Amino acid sequence: MYPFIFILTSFGIRFTSVKEKRQMSSSTIEYYTYVSEQIMVYLGLFCLVAGVVGNIFNLIVFLSLKTFRNNTCAFYLTITAIVDIGQLLTGLLTRITITGFDNDITLSSLFYCKFRAYFYQFFSGTSISCMCAAAINQYLCTCSNPRWQQWSKIKINYGAAIGIIIFWFLHGIPYLIYNNLIPLPGGLACAYSNEVFDQYAVYGFTAFLTGFFPMIINGTFAFLAHRNIQQIERRALPAVHQELDKQMTAIVLVQFIYHTISTLPYIIVSIISYNPTLNADPLIEARIEIASSVTIFILYMNYAVPFYMYIFVSPRFRRQFIYAFFQVCINRWRQRIRVINQVTPRPSNPNIRTNDH
Image 1 (cartoon, rainbow, N blue to C red):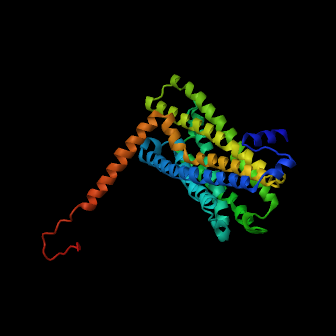
Image 2: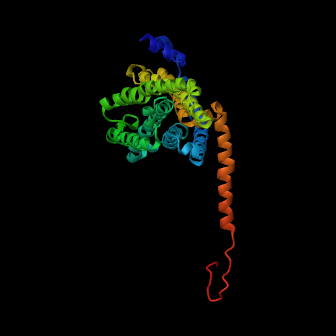
Image 3: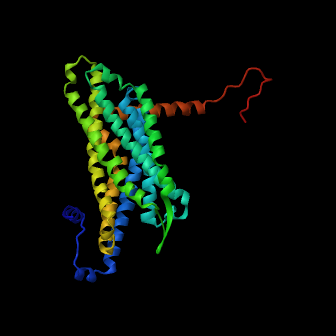
């Protein structure tokens, strides 16, 4: 019990005596509620816009340059960028409208109530699975053993990516079944109607499947790949190949570190908030709500910051982004504009008419 008390205290949550509880006015609880709303609205909107733009930039770089199109690690990071956009638009945007604008679409539509829960688990599960797959493949392609390197071929990993997507599609079926509109004394709530599945969502999915288990997998293979990179100069590999391996290893390593930092607080607060004895006190519940808003924002930053992390840790990625955006994409756009603006020449035969009116 004492570790939980310490964690709650670190988020500004402290246990009060009976006398102190009686002295607490409703304005204090309203203040905590207001703070949590402001955190989610302003920081959430910033995270949403920056995240969508950053992931679009990632897609531009990974899909425009042949270097990345033929790289297995970049292939998984491309999928991650796509599902991260989906997570921000379906998960974070809905939470912003609920918390900041008092517009809870999940309470007015049973379909959206189930839809949001289903795609939240699909996007988050696919994202972290592809991060793990990227770390594993980066380890395999930096191994000195050719047999291990064969498993990092991009054609082999097409099937693995399809398997990841199918797994999380099937995993979400219980979310469609058990997520319902439940009548409560204060009105409806979009929540799990099965208590056992509710426990699984907290401890099984949040804490294990998208928490500690991928942290172990991601961290293990990211550091193993980093160890291989330390020895890569001893092998007779082209300089371009060595630089690409170093770049992708740095990316998966820093992504693992940030994912761990951003996910652990959310897991801890989710487990604490599941304790019904704490939620019985309105003041503690309001403080937990602030802690929840902060950790949810940090969690969603995990889907928003990859592009900015890549820019920060990899000077090569910065140059590649500038080249891909300003030379490849803009030149293609200019070429399309020229084609559209071209005037169709009139035929020399006067009997042939052109449809230019």
